[in-house]
Structures are given as structure tokens and as C-alpha cells.
Length: 317
Image 1 (cartoon, rainbow, N blue to C red):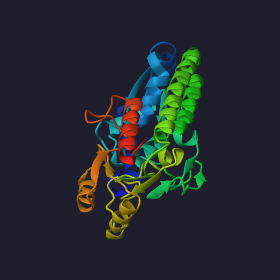
Image 2 (cartoon, one colour):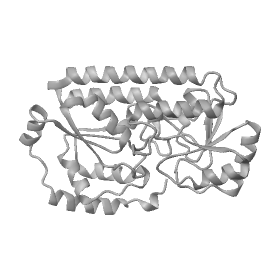
Image 3 (tube, rainbow, N blue to C red):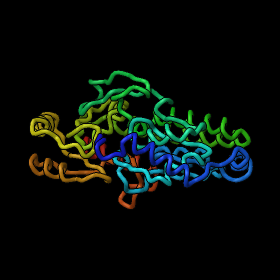
Image 4 (spheres, rainbow, N blue to C red):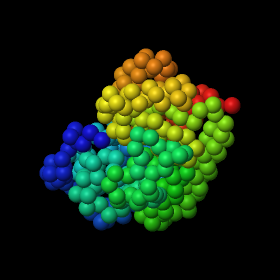
């Protein structure tokens, strides 16, 4: 992850002081008014957390995201206003380990109703190669080095959804029944997505796919595939010449047809590798944000597009 491009902890702390000075925090009575009268003020760190908050919160929440559409989440920098606004939030949902600037700002905010999605499921270590034959070691969310891309596995994402739903029930008990109903509905849709992936990727000509961003380790493990990342989990990391040579060999050995790139990062590396190996290029979206270039309007639709792309590339029967 390109940490050098992110705000250092000291700078975040200073900005937090400025933000908190500029934006006065809600009093206890103001917060109660949000919960009992107006919509709950929810802040989400980036799109996968925003989608959960909107789907589960429904009409009872007003959700804002710290990461604007089109911004690469790993490289997010927060403004003093955004940092100060965290203290006004009734509920915050984020994923520790993917956005250091957000992690630091939330830690400085003193907010109480905060949900860290990484603690709602089990994280694992993933390198550039992950899949059916190479499983990572399991870790809990507070351990460094664990792969944070849990939302790309519908089963793990459903576990997170259940945890977020329970947290919203506790924060806003007046609407607990609705949160429970919405959570159940979302989990049902995610279960259906899992079934579609399981059936759709059961019989394929190859089990290996190549991607510029090693974000799909959980997905690969879930559905018996092997992800070969050109670089690591940082989407803008430059691959070494040795890794490029290795990818050439892997593509030939495993009859790989396609090099996948994503919508929020450069496709230069994928196109260069594809040209050198005679492979095609395709989009496999890590769903870190929705833009007008996304192959779908929301999480479910983009995941369905990802499934179709994988089926085509892997030669699904």
C-alpha cells in the first residue's frame, strides 16, 4: 500500500484538532434528536461500507462517505472538515487496515458508536498468489499484514452485514426491527450471489486468473480458484522484472486467456503484459468505488459482472 502518499499520523492529529475547533460536536441532546427524530447521521469510510449502511439503515439513516467516487481508497487524504465531521456522526462504519488516514482520524475523533468491519469476520494473509491450493493463515482484524478485501467474498461480506445490523440496532433501538428486516434481506441477496458464483465457476477450463491488483484472494479461496497478482495488494505497486517473467510462465502453463485490470487504477501494466504474452485484457472490479465506468450500479450488479468476466476468461462450461 502506498503509505508515503497518505497523511502521517501527526498530521492527522493536527488536522483533527483544527476540524474539531471549526466544527462543534453535537451535544448529547442533539445526538438523541438525530436518533429519535431525524435520520441517523452515518459516516462510511468507502463504498463497501457505504453500501452496507444504506441497505441496512434504509429510510432511517443519512449516509455520507469519506471516499468520493473515483478516488482510489488506499490513497485517500482527509480534509479537516471531514475529520471534524467524524465527531458529529451518530454512527461510523469503516474497515481498518485499508485506509491508514481513516484509521488515524477515527482514532483521534473519540467517537463511541464506531464499527470496524475487520472485527466482524476473520481476516487472512494473502500474497500475490492465493487460491484453492494456497490458503493464507487466519488472523483477526487487528493484526498487521492481513488482507482487508473481505467484501469480495459474499460469504464474509454477509458476516459483516450481520454485525453492522446488530450494531445499528444497539445504536438506534427504536428502529431495531427495521434494521433486522433489512439485514435479513441483504444477507438473502448475498447468499444468492454466493450460489451464483459457486455454480457458475464449478466447471471451468482453467482455475487460474491474472490480475494487476491482488484484491481477490478471498474470492479465489471461496470458489476454488487461484489468483495470480502481477503485483501485491497495492494496486499501484510496480511489478519486478522477475515477477513479469514468472507471470509469462504461469499464463502459458495454465492456459490463461486474460489479464484483468480495475477501473480506479491505470491499465498500463495489464496492457503491456497482455501485448507481450498475446493475452486479452478485461475488467475485474475490486469494488472500492462506483463510478460511471463501473459495470453496474451497485455492489450486487458489479459482482454479477465480475462473475460473467471470470466465467468468460476461465472458460466456464
